[in-house]
Image (cartoon, rainbow, N blue to C red; front, side, top):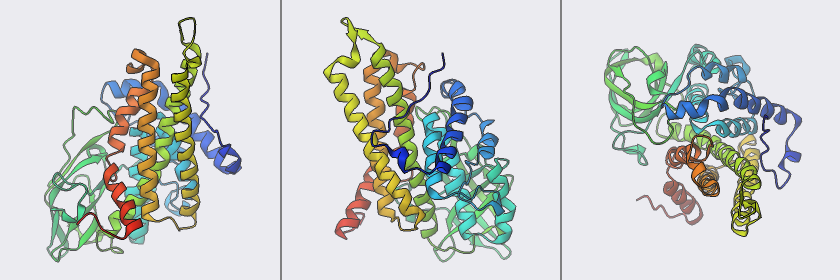
Amino acid sequence: MKIEYIPPDYYLMDELLTDEYKIIRSSVRDWVTREVKPIIEQAAQSHKFPTHLITGLGRLGALGPFIPEKYGGAGMDKMAYGIIMQELERGDSGIRSMASVQSSLVMYPIYEFGTEEQKMKYLPGLASGKLVGAFGLTEPNHGSDPASMETHVIDNGDHYVLNGSKMWITNSTICDVAVVWAKDDQGFVRGMLVEKGMKGLSAPEIKNKWSLRASVTGELVFDNVKVPKENVLPNIVGLKGALLCLNTARYGIAWGAIGAACECYDVTLRYAKQRRQFGRSIASFQLTQKKLAEMLTGITKAQLLTYRLGQLRNEDRATSAQISMAKRNNVKMAIDVARECRQILGAMGTTGDYPMMRHLMNLESVITYEGTHDIHLLITGFDVTGENAFH
């Protein structure tokens, strides 16, 4: 018998959503149930990203949904983008990561900072999933401190010569184009489009991960790569461009983490009602109810946080600090929910028959990437005190 997914909605958030948002959510939710859920456990166990899903994401409108239709996007707003990310991460953080990187870290900077020629060349293919993108900012020696990046370019007339390396790059081994950030001769950070097949570019995969196993993670290594001047994003100079991309990605993560938490909670609530010990369901015990009540409270707070943040994003009023707060709170909430759900299921919770351990291990990466848990705390601290704890 098919079990219908019923996410918690304790504060009746559905009443705040338009019919259009509900239709978008329903289409993505059905796709995840049909295409992702039946294969994701095996994909995670075998450490293999299901690449056949990429074009499906494109047909769904989940790749660059906020990009105008002129460039192949769906022309949706930021609230719709968040709803899509939430439903995708219910399936798996790796699936949401692929869509998040493609949308926020590749398509967004091309649309915001690129030329018309660059937009027309890359965006339609990225929106359809025929092209795969990657984002190169983090380096082996520089994660939370991107301003200290060592990757650099030298002006050589009609092209730049790019040298350096990027680390922990989603989609690295399968990408057709990467948005890479590097310092020029004057020390200014520039964004550029590095294409698959350019001489001197390699992308070794990172193996043996305990987390995001159904996702491609690797490096981007540049050995005297010639990047044509027309591949440079002309409308941004400095680290601000990369950070604006991260804002968009972090916003999506804040929504996505709720999807992972809701999936764990829904499965666990059903299990607790059915599992019997000492002659009664374990849902009847006080400690189980305490855990479920606290999980529901955390999910509900996160739902309210992201809904308001979505409104602010649509009005172009959301600050970087507000986005950081939501990302930090919601991912930590989702980790706590996944861990408590695993405990309620006991030993069964450690198996691939249930999603808790997979979500839990995935979220250990999510709480680190796009700004670590502690860094986001300091961003909030700086915002409220005016005192910079980073220096």
